[in-house]
Length: 417
Image (spheres, rainbow, N blue to C red):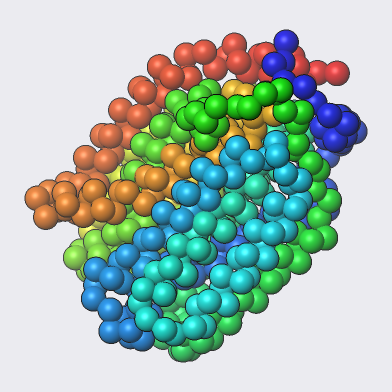
């Protein structure tokens, strides 16, 4: 028996899911996925250019440039923590529209060249607004997808961020060589405005529930969904491996004289996800998460191992494909697991909890591993992370994998009319 009450708007959501049970590519799904793509493009484009901008415009030190780049993740985490508990209090479309407008406004702040401190504040604000918008988009998608195609749908939706992760840095590096920073910020403003337009013209259901009577005490459960914490720890560990690639692949490629191949690394990574995600999404829905998680963790481990021994262009790009095939599909599958663990009223908080684990790892891994590299070197670090990925497969088994078949069968039964 569900422990929450629903209002008429939630009944509308369930009716929508029932009516469109087998339909995935609706107008709203395409528009919301497109909105996610364009705000993610801004994120990744600026991640590879903001440090250079800090040094060239404000004569910032490398430490200040690093803070300007990384403080975005801090704002993002704060945004996710804040919004996860607010979906029951405010209209969801209003949250999404306001956060979309705030993203556009925060992009305008980049045009103001006061000092490095103001830039750091701008990055913090931008990260906060991005965290709210990205979390809300992922939550809405998780709610409106047909139960029978939820894994597949989340796979396609998260592909919007995957493509942005490949295209955004590529455009950023290209514009750094052939355009000025004003042009970069202008393009980001255009992308942010396009994203807002998609949001405004989308049909977004409300996620508001009836509140329990009486004043609620402030607790950790209001910021994190307990049932989603184990899988959030899994994705945090797995993302720690990927964070090392995201942060250090260019430095490593320079050390092993594979700089030319490194420029295509994330393109190969994205293509591996693009071609495999439709298959793995359907597999999650039909067979369960274990059929994807275990093989993909092993593939990720193999990819990290190949990366550790890469001495040719072929091996470096092979590692890119294996890491994309592994991590890219773990990412979407773990998110499907997070929302599968909770009733509909807690999907927003579960989504927030999942992304907090992933974002925390992507933000922390460069700092932690940066202290390790002087002692181990890049090759031994990547080899150690290959072993660590295998350890995370065991952790996944204990927190979820061993009971997955029972949960999958229960979800399938509830989705059957």
